[in-house]
Image 1 (cartoon, rainbow, N blue to C red):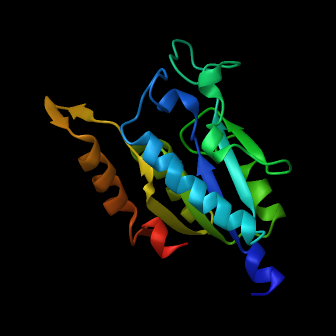
Image 2: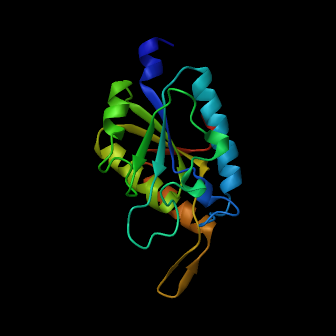
Amino acid sequence: MSEDMKSAEALVLVDIQNDYFPGGAYEVPGSPAVAEVAASLLTSFRRQNKPVVHVQHIAIRPGSTFFLPNTTGAEIHVKVFPAKGEPVVVKHFPNSFRETELLETLRSVGAKRLVIAGMMTHMCIDATTRAACDLGFECTVISDACAAPAQTYGGLQVPPEHVHAAFLAALNGSYGKVVEAQERL
């Protein structure tokens, strides 16, 4: 693969942060498994010298209860901790492009295709993938490297796996392709 083709694809790891893990301020079911799969993707991209961008949410909204500035919970999880030289884009909204340097960072490495993983499927993964597609990127979301918590609407309890599946189904084909990691490794 030519150097141009390598740099045309980047891995974007969104919000794989301590507060989403057991013992954190907002535990997301399945987060340890997500971290394992994301770590495999990260290792693969690093071996191929492909660009990796870490996205870290820092809460600034009054009343926030997780990802608080200068806390262990806001730190990127050890399984996917950035290596020296890997950019970390700090965000304050679900859309990783909103008021951040993500677009400039991706353009600086020549990215045209994005492989997206992280949490939470129904919020930041959804918002980031839709924005990336609107900005002209070809997106692949790694289904087993994402997770979502249960949700409630209109008195209906929606289990985590249904939230996850519904949002991935909406993204698949319209805003990108949704695949399992084994299809990418």
